[in-house]
Length: 328
Image (spheres, helix red, strand yellow):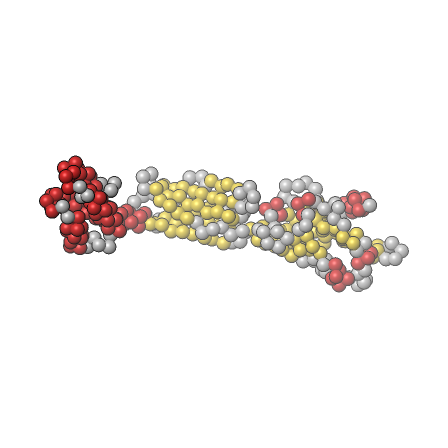
């Protein structure tokens, strides 16, 4: 019976979507949204004699689909389109006051740009039509979600910068700029998450030395822009720090190799350690983690190698390898 009623209503409510006037509302992916709809009627609204259908035209569907149905005051969602199952709610206790609003839950990417509208029909006790409207409360839903703040990484071997961001919707606009204006990046790569429907985007651009680049991601629905700026010089400073740290480690190794001669005569690891500490203190290396680690490893190796002084000659090469490399 409900299916027959729906077929009849479909015949009455064929709507040319090009003629539909709707107002857009924005909903957040995964959240709920209210499609507000109220009726001002001179005749009293009697829910028991009310037939009400929320329908939708989805962006990838040619025909309208049932979103939520009420027949003679009772909800009957047998003809409901599967994508809306357990996701809709009307407020039956407020129907008599003309509140026909629909709560749409757990917004999905399939809901994006869908146009919703209401058909209602009310009869009196003699089955005469009192009220009817076949395209009421027309609303277009735009679904969106904020992107994560973009991450910019720099490849100094190829002199390229890459910008990535995840978890947003819909497709964003990504731009690169530097001190002089817009840059010309490679074609962005966009991948859709199969589960959530959100989008991940990445883009690569050529860079030069001592350049400040900014990657900006604009969400056209939320009118939201997120950006991250990186300086190619800053990374090189970090690289210089690493080089300095490496020099510190090398210095410990070199001075350690010189002290091996003392070690051979003194056979004292404590003397070996104190000599290295003195050297490091003079060169402000005591706060250098790499140098301290190298010192600790070599001192530990030293203690292990003096267990048998008769084997000093074969161990001489091992200790030298220890202080000249980081393989203790």
